[in-house]
Image (cartoon, rainbow, N blue to C red; front, side, top):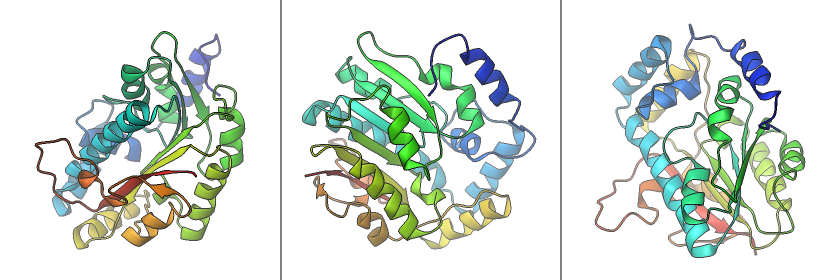
Length: 270
């Protein structure tokens, strides 16, 4: 687990040595679409190639971030969740999970999980916290749910409810059965009254072309059908309006959301 001790600069330096800025990197490309500054020419070149065939990708990136804000606001505010396990963190931008949760409840505790050396470089930025709360970082792959649960237990109390946050991460697992098994194992590790907030990309003519471009560049991503995304919530009590195109999930009053090829929802473990 990442910590704020003396080893952190050494860990970051070691991680940075593994980062190649001359080839595009999925987290940096995503950062580019979000309007961030943690990207390089190779990332912007790939990002522009994808944008040419699928201009909505910028809207998808922002819609996922906006969905995260609404979901965490619901969980911390309306439900009273105080512990969050965010798997597939990505590069920090505005309104990270701990920022949204701790604005509502400063005592919230958040564990971020990623296995990306670039994200590790930015762990110091993620490892900030409101007084009374706490954040930590676990360097692990989504395919290692037992490792994630074990290391997250150093900060989180699994005898109390936890919100699992899995945005755009299960698409990194090619086999749908394997992805479902991973989600189920993580849910088995949290107590009743916990929640799953998850979204993922879905098929469409333009988005399929975009995925072909990223795959050719060595960044495969596995789109799913809305029904497959819904299946990750099997056994859970879905929060209204269920699993929908994420801009349509509890939109801000007065907004006019348009559906995109990204579906998600929030469910409660009974």
